[in-house]
Every structure is written in structure tokens, then in C-alpha cells.
Amino acid sequence: MTSQRTRERLLGRLLEQGIKSMEVLDIMRSTPRHIFLDEALAHRAYEDVALPIGHNQTISQPYIVARMTEACVMGGKLDKVLEIGTGSGYQTAILASLAKKVYTIERIKPLLDKAKKKLKLLKLRNIDYKHDDGTLGWEEKAPFDAILTTAAPQTVPNELLRQLADGGRLVIPVGGEGQQKLKLITKKDEEFREDVLNLVRFVPLLKGQLHR
Ligand code: SAH
Image (cartoon, rainbow, N blue to C red):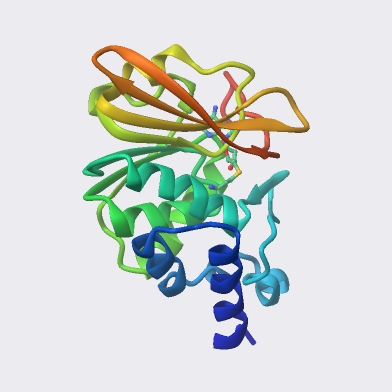
């Protein structure tokens, strides 16, 4: 069903679209995406598209996962990563294969529980999970070499900038509903450099009340 050929085709597409990190491409080749989808959608897992995962949320498009991961990896060491918006857990799996330790936060409990099961299935044990509002980051575990946000706030939360290590990278879609700018913000000597990587379409980063 999810033949090796369709998976290779996806890899070709990522290369074509400019993903250069061999490390990232190798991890994307070896990480199954279909297990993070409901059975009815699993046959579409290796198409380069975002797909629904329930609760009005989506699993990110593979190209965007690769692009965000590459931005985290290429900028320097990647011992400690914070991910905001666990969702299906697919991006978490990619990060956990590259970083020493991943901290991931999700506000919808059923999604977090499901993601946890899938990541255990893949025997990825270097992940700490938290059911919470990720807007405030994860203070006790900071500083992070990279923070990756897979839902879009209107403006960059200051807390996240504060929780970056020196040399740390924040990869985050910023803007209102509809289209956002995917930004790479690098912290060096308390100064921030900002690059725009892509135009993207993410679900909004919601503040406040949690979904249990
Ligand atoms: N990387 C995920 C993307 C999921 S979509 C994947 O590929 O599957 C974005 C996720 O961010 C959703 O699951 C949504 O519930 C979550 N989210 C939105 N606002 C949040 C917040 N304030 N804190 C934590 N998670 C949040």
C-alpha cells in the first residue's frame, strides 16, 4: 500500500524543492509517515500534502517538515529541542532522530496521547511530553538549541525568544489565519537575526484554555 516507490518519489520531490541536508533527507526516508495517519488516509501518507488528523488539526506537509528541520539542524548543535504543537507526532519523530532530547507540548490531550503511542512504537525514548499551552515555552527545560513551532501566532512570543540558547534558532510561522511567513530567528549575543524561509499555511497557535 505504502510502497517503497511512492516514498522514494517523495524524497525526489524534497530534493527538487531544495532540501540539501543529507541528514534530514535520510531521516525522512527512514521515518514512516503512514503510521501517524488514520487508516483511511494512510494511503496518501507519501504525498507532499498536509492531511487532517482530527480535532480540526493537520499533519504538516513533508516539504515544510523537511524545511523546518533543516533550519534547526544546519544552524549549529542540536542537543535540546522544543517543539510546540505535537499534533500527530510526525515532526516529533523526525526531531527525535536528530536531537539528543526533544521536549514537545500539545494543547489537545487526545492528540498528545495518540502521538505518544506512535512514538513509543518507533522506540523513540528521548522525548518528554507536556499537555499545556506552548505559547509560554517550557521554562524549566530552557535554554534550547532550537525551538520549532508548528502552529502560527500573530506575533513571535517573547518567552520563546528568551528560552533560546546563545546560537539558538526559533523556526516559527508568524501571521494571521490564511498565509503566514515561516521565520528563522537566530539568537547571538542577545541579538536576533531574522530570515524568512517560506510562505506557509499553518493552523493558529491558540492561547489559553486547554482541550482535555
Ligand atoms: N507537527 C504537527 C502539526 C500539527 S498542527 C504534525 O505534523 O502533526 C499544529 C498543532 O499545534 C495542533 O495539534 C494544535 O493543537 C497545536 N497547538 C495549537 N496551539 C497550541 C498551543 N498554544 N500550545 C500547544 N499546542 C498548540
